[in-house]
Length: 149
Image (cartoon, rainbow, N blue to C red; front, side, top):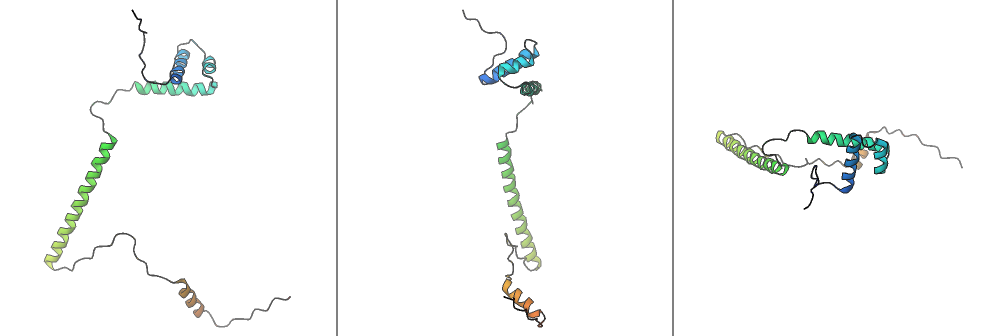
C-alpha cells in the first residue's frame, strides 16, 4: 500500500523553482526567517525579497477569475485581418473601375493612374549649377599676392 503525499500535486516547474517556492512559503508560514531562506537559496537577502514579491504577485494573478468562453488566438486574428485587407483591396479596385467607367460614359478625360513608388526627380547636375553661379559672379577678381618664400 503506497502513501500518497498530501497537498497540491505539482507537475510543472523546475527543481530550483520548486525549492524557491518552498523557501518563500516557509518564510510566510513563519518556519524560517528571510535571512535563513536567502542563505538556503544561496542568494542575498535583498534578492530574496524580490523573489518573494514576484511569488506573491504570481499568486494574486493566479487567483484572478478565468475568462469564460473561447479565447482569441493571435494567429487566427492575424489571418482574419489579412483576409479583410485583401477584401478591402479588391473593393477599392472595383470602385476605381466603376469610377473610370462612369467618367468615360459622361465624357470626362480619363485620369492617369498615379505611379506607385518614388516620384522621378529632374536631374540637377551640380557642376552646371556651380558654373552658372560662377558666371553670375562679378568679373572683378583681385589678384592674390603670391606667398613670400
